[in-house]
Image 1 (cartoon, rainbow, N blue to C red):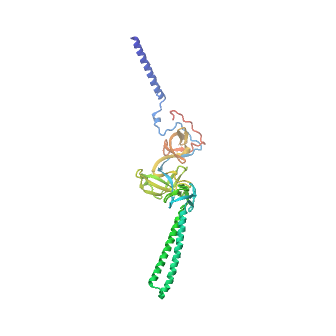
Image 2 (cartoon, rainbow, N blue to C red):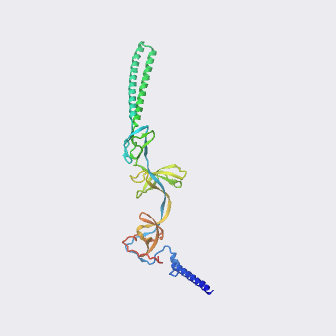
Image 3 (tube, rainbow, N blue to C red):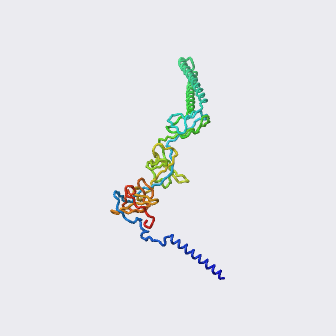
Length: 380
């Protein structure tokens, strides 16, 4: 019995000692036994590092201000040519030759595709022969009419015979005109076998090869004029109302390092049912050299927001921390700040500075004495 009691007591003591060790470890890790940071220091805003230092010589001061900064919403789109031509065939014929390849520059009137014209050449020659025959018949009928006009005046032929001759002359003339129009149609049809470019531009794609049989309406070559491009973007209906024709807007293409300015040339007055977006076309964005199909963004004005911005040169970075030097008369203190996006040579301040404060604008420059490395302690 005593052995059993002793065993239970030993287990209880072991459990109690283990519990004390665990609790002590937790308190020690949480700095329960260490130096406390005063509540006033914890709540200080902004958090300045202690210890003012003399204002560095050569320091350039910058006054922190709160500014109204325009805000923008973006809409994605793609670059398209303002003038694109899908060049097709008017005939059912076999392709004899293709004189272009994708990417080739062409001028208005250049030959793109040639179709087989053997049958049409024969038809044109037949139409020419029929015209020659009709002209001869018309000339003979006119000669007969002129001769009988003299005879009817002398009474050598009857009036009825003369009317018959005049009718034959008119029929012969009409037949000659008809034959002439048939020849023009045959020649026009023959010209359709040589397909020309209607514009100056670049061949996007050729869709046929020699030997292919094409039919009327079939697209053979696509050409676009890259001298005038446009960005076609899908704009949400809540933003489309803020755009107007002729308005200048910012456009950014991912392939270019800078934004450009374009002009709203068209707002399609119909929203897509599923996406509730309007199609907006912006002409003239970005320099020559862009191609159809490139990805881009249209930036639409969307009010303004108050932001604090400071020069990038005023910031020193220590790992993941950013620090500025705040001027206090002839002295200055280092202070940690939270920063946002960079805008040109300035950076947005999210917290840590107030309007009216003055900071060293060239604190991040190597010409100034470096600040002490911030310590990972309560002084932070």
